[in-house]
Length: 549
Image 1 (cartoon, helix red, strand yellow):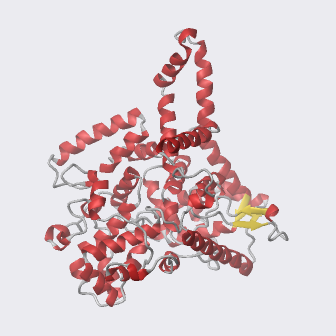
Image 2 (cartoon, one colour):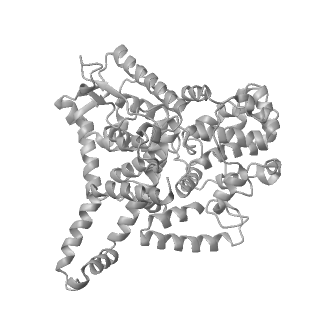
Image 3 (cartoon, one colour):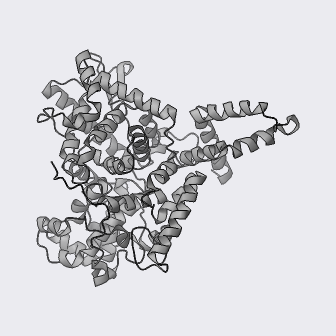
């Protein structure tokens, strides 16, 4: 397919999607209303209407909507290609994902049967009233969750990824013996250090960075003042592309919420607030089995975190509404996964009576709530928090728990992490492998959560700035490898998996930018004193003074 055909197909696809959007009807209405304005002339009608839409800001809103579509649409392909091949081109990946989905659904159905808890039920009137009254205080409720267990944990998912094999690939053809050292044995192309440096040029420490206070040519105070002023202009211009480029060097604390919402094109207009209220009503009217999984996960993770336990109520509100949001199903058009289905009672196997369960098609797992928790530092309005989280999920987070060959998918991130260590720190990798402490078994839990719950909040938000700025999760794999590099000397002395984990814990004093920047990346410099200083007290957001519950 030539470049012109691909472009035409992309334009047609975006036009088709936007035609049914609320923005399209708004712009259409504005264009009709402006016809009564005196500056609109019949002889130059088209140009005058365009000029009006531009000066009134609607052209910019349309550009942002198009920019969002470009980030979530499937890559151009042959028009006769099956949809499943577009979602995931590799057959063995599709097969593995389908098998994993069956396993998850079987676990959920078994739990429902064993506990005698239906997948969904309508709440009695008294229960609806009680939930309505305590909607903002759900954290005070202490339901009995002892019978419920997470459907799966990250370590279960890792075992599935380790077992992945391409039946058409002969591993004997691998050039280096190091290829067999790692746990991930699939032939995917991932970037090496020179390619990463080229793709992430803005992370070079010779230019100013928010989140690091030295090694720049400009004094930190001067840089930050000038950088904040530029950020304010970006927010004022309301340009998603400019905001994304700006965030590559970090977002100022006071502007981060606006910049992230702008990058994600999360507007939180009246219709977004109404949509959130409809989801809230759905939560109040019906109880789902997955609600208990959400409660359990929040109790096990965020409620026991010094940074996030104060946001327990917000987490329940957002995640319960998220589970009911059928708009999330849109992301399955480009996700390798397929939404799970359940059947009405007595109609098992009859597709006419099949329904997606839960309604958003996403079964929460252990640690899922940590995708939301850091956002609570940025947004105190539930509907705004919800809309930003949903966009973050359908752009990035879904890739961390689905099997695919995407360069930002968890399989590629694991492979990239292992190859970085194998290439630049082979002695360390071999030592850890020999003592039964495979690096990926330690780092996987960091990566599957995008480091949420492991880094201090200010450092985590700086990391997520770069995820949004580069529209890629690759920086997560680079940071995971850099952590090992910066603790290499100590790790060479450990003799077991347990001692290796102790050596790497905690990460709360880690300075993210020193780790992932070009100058300090995975290389022999990791053994230097300057590199070891990257583990320093860089936190500016202090944890709440109250002890974790």
